[in-house]
Image (cartoon, rainbow, N blue to C red; front, top):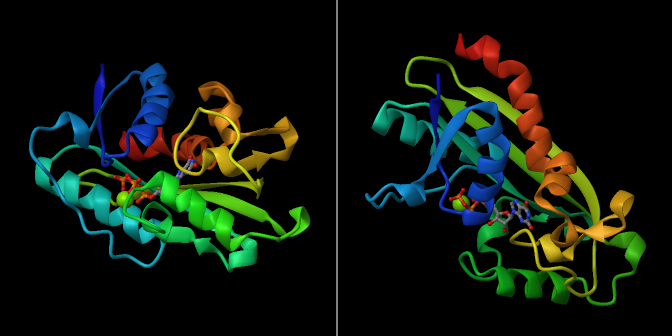
Amino acid sequence: MVEKLLIATKNEGKAREYRSLFEPKGFEVITLNDIPEKIEIEENGTTFVENATIKAKALADKYQVLALADDSGLAIDQLNGEPGIYSARYAGDHDDEANKQKVLTKLEGVPREKRTAHFHCAIVVCDPNKPKLVAQGQVDGVILTAPQGEGGFGYDPLFYYPPFEKSFAQLTMEQKNSVSHRGRAVNELMEQFDQWWK
Ligand SMILES: O=c1[nH]c(=O)c2ncn([C@@H]3O[C@H](COP(=O)(O)OP(=O)(O)OP(=O)(O)O)[C@@H](O)[C@H]3O)c2[nH]1
Ligand SMILES: [Mg+2]
């Protein structure tokens, strides 16, 4: 049976990754960009899990479907965890170029050993008739001094992943999924999903 999964995102970068992660598992993936109705959900939580819960619950309740939300972001040690839950709106609302530039400016002159950073991803799955399912993932990297690579989205060109000696924007989708915060959160989710869903 093909299960329909509504992903509570308008971010096409995330949507691409979720399609590549869930379609092979037999889900039909749709996102907010596939729905004609314009939906605004205010992300006013104080943690990734709270924001993901707000997004998933809003859609599960509204459409009475299985809904998955992802709240994610970049935490830079030298900046005390900034931009964190504000990653999408750090410099300008969903302005990836301005956001990346702000990071580079704030880290100007900071040596490599102090440029450590982490991507975080919280996934919350809601079904109208069940308690929520939560999974999280994280990956460690280093912020480059200039963008490298064309792939991925968001801060990926600035996020250098030492084990692969490449930025996240220089990886294939499969390589990124195999180590990313989102890929790891999905793995954790799938370990619980069957038990939760039955
Ligand atoms: O380089 C990146 N590679 C990634 O893999 C990644 N994952 C998250 N992010 C950043 O964190 C924000 C999430 O904020 P966010 O969870 O609120 O999502 P969003 O507002 O973009 O879409 P939505 O899902 O809320 O509709 C995003 O916009 C990006 O700036 C990433 N950047
Ligand atoms: Mg958002």
